[in-house]
Image (cartoon, rainbow, N blue to C red; front, side):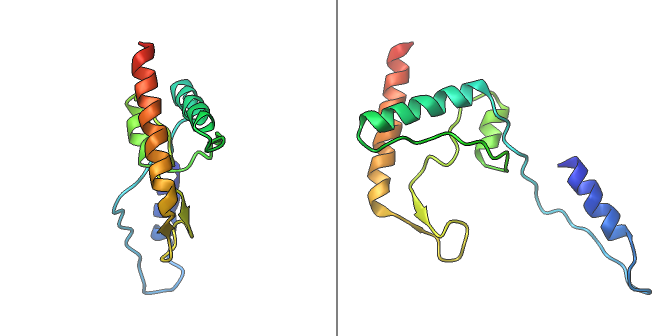
Length: 120
């Protein structure tokens, strides 16, 4: 994040049109989620539960992008990103939740949590 902010500031400090200036205003930042063993283990358990319930494999990909889940992960709280309802047209003005996925994902979350608590 620091590297990108420095690059942005360098560009803002460079004048391309004489007599003009640029002000860079950072309104917020999100840092990338780190790939951690605890997150991977939780994701594998989540996927296993999903398969056992007949919803198929959840899968595991790590893109290194910014995420609200990164905040929990940074505090060493195991987290699975993007485990909410399935959506169409993600990150667009036409984004919509696929209603049938809400109950499925809620059930996967509940069984995963209950299963993990019973293992301790």
